[in-house]
Image (cartoon, rainbow, N blue to C red; front, side, top):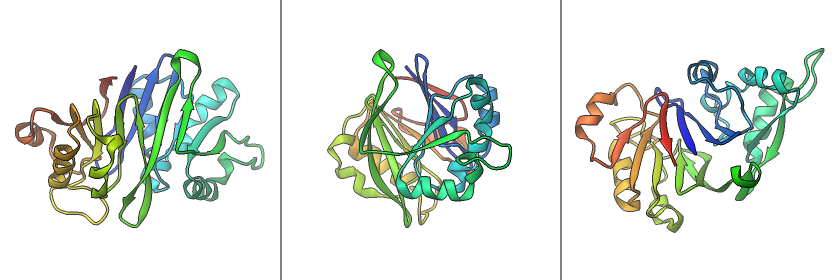
Length: 231
């Protein structure tokens, strides 16, 4: 089983989980077409969203080739607010407009759910974290947590996040930010939760990859576009 951090920098982040033929995309960043082509992703089984912001959802349109290939709507999952706002902004993807067929099926996410069948099934737990004034969904699966947009330090108290194999966490800037963890806060969360490895994602331009490599603890690494992790 693998996870690709398909987009990890400049305030946009997506990832893709691959377990056999079960391929689950987390968020659809605006440049998702380039990322999918670069990493030769030829199938999307489903999409799960963290929240409704444009940098997580505006690439949904680019999934049309997967609909054309299979002539089947792609299942997209998110909380009620996220799915309602996406449907409002990109109605044509969910409801027939003129001669264009809808390509996405909307699903409201549960706190526990699974995607895939038999030995390719992946079980997810979800919980809400604060992203400034916005609620954002975080995901736990296969001893891994994915928290892409948050500044919610209360997560250090969550038992489910203790001693994971991987913690993939937002780390936007060096300076404090009203809706994202900065480097100091991300490292604080790492120290409290004690995963085997923490991966910093959503990195802005002031967090240069080589700069971070020289300064981070050995069990904390900066993500980069196309980073592959074996779970």
